[in-house]
Length: 212
Image 1 (cartoon, rainbow, N blue to C red):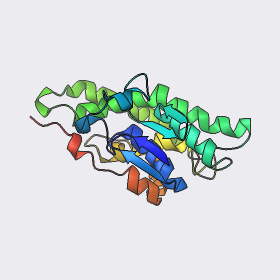
Image 2: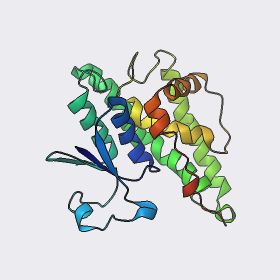
Image 3: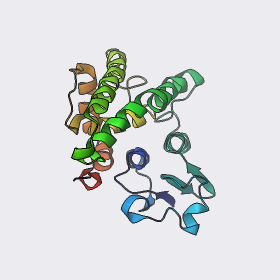
């Protein structure tokens, strides 16, 4: 049985669990990280060199790094589905996964950490506002692309939607200024119709919130 190590409130674990839910894969999720600890246990350290979640074990195959896990599960269990067939089609999904990692995520997570993981009295509101503005600019790029198609790589959900889509629940529920991006908002509404998205991504992050 597929094993997934990681707590459900981790956005990187949520990416993996969203795929697991979409594909209805039999699995066991093991709570580690955050308040659960366990990252320094011999069992977990034997699976990954960097001690971070998520990690999966699928038979004899162990994969870490969330985007790599998403790619693996899609290719292993949904070829020509979540994993588009053909180099060109696959690249359309891959490029947005890499865009998420190299362009969007750094600014997005700065906003989230500033607004949720930092006590109100210690927040650098100027830095948060600047990161939020850059995040909105990144989402505007995606908004323009979504004018031509309903999903990241075409007319159906693929692995390319998973990393970017996983950020949207937090983005749209944070107490920040957001510009109107109609295509992005419609895309988020489409994602919310999917049971796996609601179950595994729309997870309250209140337990992560740090207060004074």
